Length: 112
Length: 113
Image 1 (cartoon, one colour):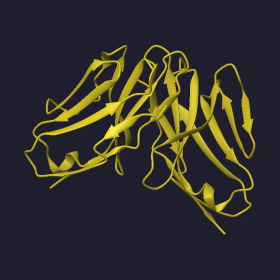
Image 2 (cartoon, one colour; image 1 turned 90 degrees about the horizontal axis):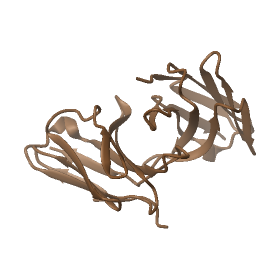
Image 3 (cartoon, chains in turn yellow, brown; image 1 turned 60 degrees about the vertical axis):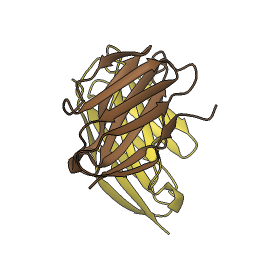
Image 4 (tube, helix red, strand yellow; image 1 turned 30 degrees about the horizontal axis):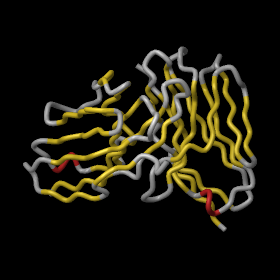
């Protein structure tokens, strides 16, 4: 089955800095790659996603890039703010099974 | 739509007791997932239903766990008998197979003493 690796497990940045979280996946058939943000005690919520026919997608301060050849994708957050502090999960979906396999998560801490 | 609705939000029980978690997916979604979240293991897929039919239950830890989806608007996850190592947050999520997007419920935090 699919295996998703996520790095780093924790990331501390100063407010205004950029943050980058990286993920790799194992199944070349996977074609959908969402990112979820989970605040403490809350549910994971979708913040951005990318499909395999696109190399990059941007939404305000958040961007995601995908390299299908290398089987890795990344989340970029620019001009970080304290409210960006949360756990971020990447995931990959295989169309054969329609299930999401999640990475272990990255705890992002943005200090004022 | 109110989103995915889960109950109870919190459950504290003693080892050996039966636990039933409930989920109401978003209307119109044809897929439903049960995930378990712990610090050690992260988000683990337990079981996946498509059009009310269980498709993949390979993540169900053992026979003590069972899940049902009798209709498109209701699913249950049952643990019998419960053990302390079952303590976790259990999330239900629903989505459309066509898009792949998942929407999570608020979760049920289970503590087994």
